[in-house]
Length: 472
Image 1 (cartoon, one colour):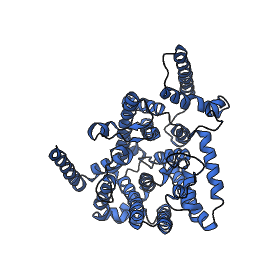
Image 2 (cartoon, rainbow, N blue to C red):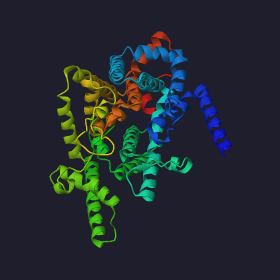
Image 3 (cartoon, rainbow, N blue to C red):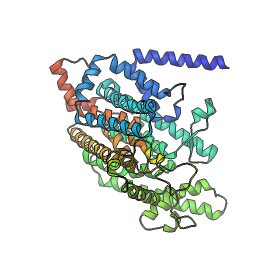
């Protein structure tokens, strides 16, 4: 048995080495899939896990051994204001974390991988052949996550999601939060919708995908992704010129949503009345999809509190008060700490959540409060500036139809989603996406630079007709 396992591992390693040399964008697809579908990541002997090691291998292939990518990164990433600010953000984060808590090797690993992820995201997006990598990886990881969601619901009746792949092949029942599934489905849904309105993928396939992904979001019962999708969809309606407003379609969508919610309420209550359909799992789904949203507009207030009158942990009301308490505690820190933060991990290390008595420390449940506490007001201002600057640059180019892969919408979902979540904005994946967004805003500049400097990279379409005909 051990021989089979070791032989399989060696074969996989050999295939990955071959792909990294001869087919780097297939290798990039596998890596980005691992960034999204995190449950497939494996721990390895040494300081790096499988995803970290693959990140460095692809970085060496595309950056160190490819002069044209090195030139593009130097000119259009690190001479770009956003790239420079991100570098400052990472360097300051490393310095504060190391000076506060030590662990040189660990801090170096974490922050070097942030820079590497930023560069890789830029390189993959700036080369035309790599752009479809993002979409394909997003959709595949989302669909597999829905399979995991259904598998967990059927077998465990739980919202802590198990990976079917890991459970089957590795006997590993480690869990992830249900919101991870919703986030992946949200990414895939928005990108599929964009390609649908641009007519870049077949209509039938896109409609089926959007239906499946929407059901994945609803079944996950994640409130954070539902909140994130609303502003992103509004932005898409305002930015994308391909969308033609149709009052009948808008009314149909509104009435369909209302009918679904009413039907959900009536069916659930009918089943409860019969006394034959009762479980804590169904109660939790009902609470998340109906009771708490209703409480936000003044109904069912009593349902969001426990028997002691306190907010149920992690609901919307609880998250808001959690953030207010964190800000109050932050205001009592000294000026230097307020400016530069406590360093990465400082929220838990300094016991910011000391007033909540759980076995494991509860994080901030607000990504921006977490950045403020751990990276200081300087870090938060840098991140806000980069977000706003990249967004408006992208919107302008999207309206002019100069961006072929609107990865900005994936980033914006993460931006809004993080209002009710934790450290997603400062993880490797976020920097991978930011690098890709910077690259998408540099498409026109790179095309002009090709002509002036005769850089041999994949041509980027410039006319509207070429952009309309480009396939994902």
